[in-house]
Image: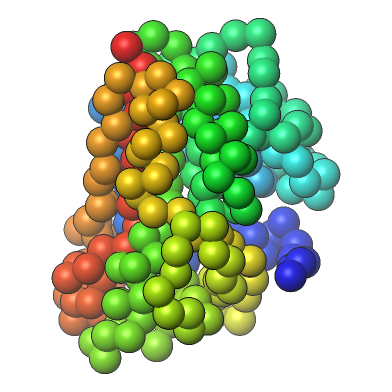
Length: 249
């Protein structure tokens, strides 16, 4: 199934949903502070939210790649209006081959857009190809099994932290599912694909990364203050945003 939405709708979904604002964006900011980020490649950059974060964090050279012309047009508009100097290009992020490597590569919410294992392996090889020795590739994904438990948990808020999935039992690798991200009156719908963390890690290791770590980023202190601990109870008991850190020796 195909879904259509504006770049502005997507920007709201990426930056303003509860898990975006209080879970994975704080995680990305902490990563950018923890490791040197002199150069960043942002695969499936969309309207450039994380590319801009990297530049603000001190990256000297940032490249954003996406296939969607509308998303890139919006990224370029924002980049030019702020005079940021990020390079944006249209290309397939899974098969990309640039003539240089980067100290940091982002592949956020990209594995869930891939419909086959061969594409997942291709992405892992692309990440390895573009990650400099001593550098990292970072991926963000949703743990479908954990999310299903949270969505069924009576402690979960009605918005399920901004991410809702059509009820599907026992998702297996490669199975499609319908995801809705809702922020206020804005809704963005996707057809996503389930890939277990074990499968993603195996692909990254086979592609040449020397170590791959899984993290489940916690709710930020700001999020706990803004929404209250009761709101986050189900998520804290079973966090479903998974961060994958792949190190290239």
